[in-house]
Image (cartoon, rainbow, N blue to C red):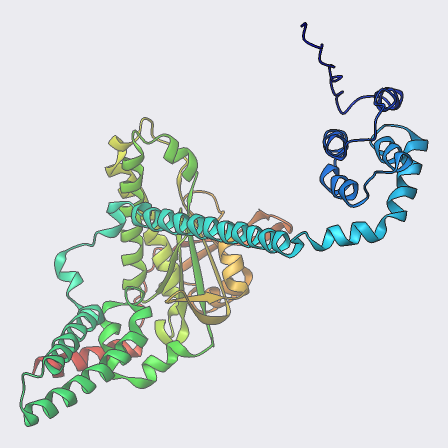
Length: 447
């Protein structure tokens, strides 16, 4: 007996099936709708298939118009979308029941945790970048200064003055603290160590207060700073009168480009700077800072003495000689020798304000501004401003020669300046009063 041919079920159409196609598919079904079949059709046709499937299972047998309207809601038809909206509105109670079965709080919690994890990851990344920046800065600072700038004239200089005292006291405090921690002493020795340590700490605190003046003043002034409170307090005062001296290497960029090697130019500038600083200190000036292609110094009246102006002017003239001699000795470091390079030096006089910045003593005020601007004088020249001219010409007119000139300044135009040179007459300036006190103090210590 031949087998009864099985009825083939029409293939289900894709999500993109048109409204007419859906109606045709439903019309071919001549028996009551199968709920499972409707559920599968809904799951394939609509983005809310699972919700509609639940609706279909709740309402058996399924209303044909309701199914049609829900199917039409998935099609790109304005009328179908309107019908679907009405159907969904009428079924709001069923939608509410279905919504209660969904764990929306869990989804929101997972979303919050994901955002928190992203924030933590961003914070860790920023911290890692900051640590890499710190590491880079440390490496850069280690290699910033040429080795020639870090050396000193001799090993003996490193063991003199307040610096060696600070190092010695620090070592003694460490030894005494170690002995106290180890507990290897008896009661009397313990009390002695405590007293000695406290005394050394007091001395160390005093010396650290003076450390900002190390290598900024005359070597003889360092010991006096510790012994004489009034001398020390004068550097902590805020205002004073004095001369400011600015030294600038003219055509320094061209000079650097003509160096045979960068190391040669670094060595040239480092050695020149040390000689200029030594000249400033020996002339009873206070070294302020190295500017990259020159130096800044000042000669306050309380420190440089009554002849502070002549000390500044004579130091400037000797700085020119130092450069010419040094440049001549280092000709082999350059591929060609410039004839119009040298030092431009500016000097001004007025009221100064002393401040401590980054552990060093510096000076601010209008005389600093104009001394630096006058440092743009031609190579080999020293230009002074009007206040400095009045002081120097009134007190040392027989020993210094002044010639009027002009200098163009940025934002000001041309200003009157005076070029100063030495006359044939010699003058022996008076040393500051503190130098005698320092000598007596050294003699007393020797005796």
